[in-house]
Image 1 (tube, one colour):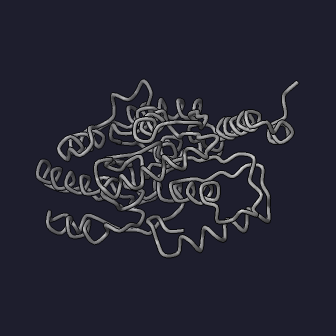
Image 2 (tube, one colour):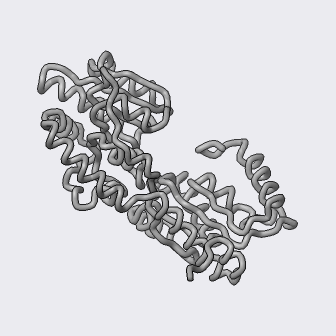
Image 3 (cartoon, rainbow, N blue to C red):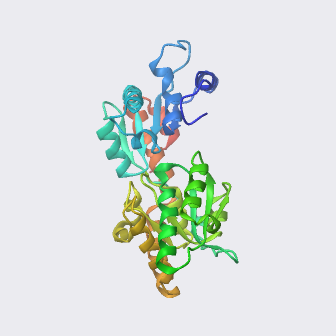
Length: 328
């Protein structure tokens, strides 16, 4: 499955359609724009008339089309496809209220039931993490793409050097199509020797590579890395975009404006200068909020409850009971 439209899409769609025929599921749930397309396409196109139809189709957007400029021609095409697919969707669980509101404005709802189901963490992910010896001063974990704002972070690094005389060390963990552009940006700003690049790895392993995580995004839905860092008591600087304020709650005033290297540099300098007790207290406040509001158990139960309600609305009571039996 490729992120962008590809020659392989019809092949993948056919394989998924055949899998659905073999499994005859009650629920088909597609994640992300491409997964959502494959899960719902058979209901739109009469390509497979002999296929048994699932009782309900479910779609969870993960950013994707929600971040598109609706005025761009190719993005208008994507949004038109999303609108057509919504008409054959029974239930849309959104990661954040922000994503739900964006979808309502860009695409709209004609028949799908919706609810906000925030991402959740396992209990073991709430264990604190200690950085390795020699960890970088700052850390970025995620895709290397423009909307993630990594170029803003690199520019902030150069501003810190200008203000303090030395740029801090930055570890970048991930991958993406903008790696060459980011390396060129660091070279142009004279901070390339302060950067290290590492391939994708499990989040808790990556979080040990830096002392303060920076999330400089221009757009987000409800990023797992923010939840994972907070749960691990990793000090965090993040931008005020998408659903990130929903994670921070009453602490959202700590967030930084996006696409503003100077503001990000000031926040990084301030975070570096915090004493250990203040840093621990700030991290603990966020960790308590995440533990209370973003559990995997609550996420799973909310999704299953949405399945049940959609199945009942479609008249499939036995399947609804099998998905989530009524409690006594």
